[in-house]
Length: 108
Image 1 (cartoon, one colour):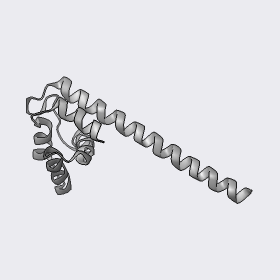
Image 2: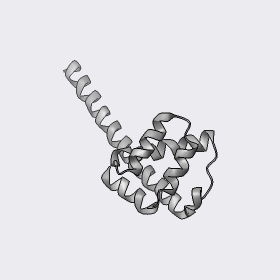
Image 3: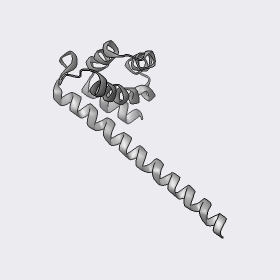
Image 4: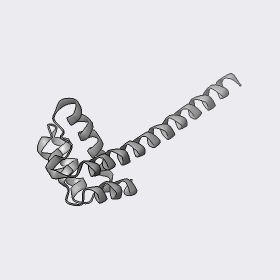
């Protein structure tokens, strides 16, 4: 999580994306966690992913929010995507292994 937060901060050191997402935030909890991320709380970095997804579906996200270069926004999204996909794959694998172990015990 710390590496992911570091990668995202490296692409947005002035928190332009974070500030943009705060102004566009509809849910108070998103604003709260975005502010925590901006203040250095690494575990709140996943809120960036939730807010980016939310604003693509329900709002307006330009290619360069608050003049953050589009390439930097793309790199933030790629870092979030990579982390979340790896996390979901490992979590699914763990759950499948637990289910298989449980069914082996019941059938054995």
